Length: 116
Image (cartoon, rainbow, N blue to C red):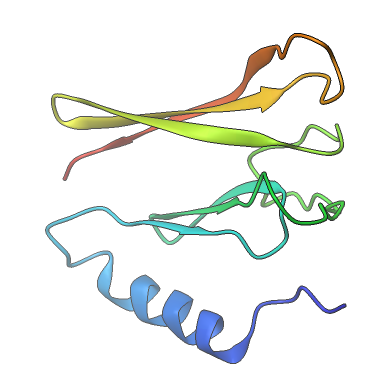
């Protein structure tokens, strides 16, 4: 199965890269294509892959552009967004041991995006 970006996703990235420097807002783009977690920033746009539950998870080969470098697998998770004044804070909580009797959620990634 091919999980590379599709033409429409590449076109969206190129469009956002062209308008982000002039826009009055910051952009956060979220997709769940691979049922895992990734985070990158391209031209001032934050991109998240957040597909942590439901379907079969796929391992990720982490590139240097990926801000999240942990190799734990699978990554059943959720992302909590909190608006704090002019800053959007986000934390990714990962299910530590999916088959444990009592679930344990761990904060495994966090970032903030300031308003312009």
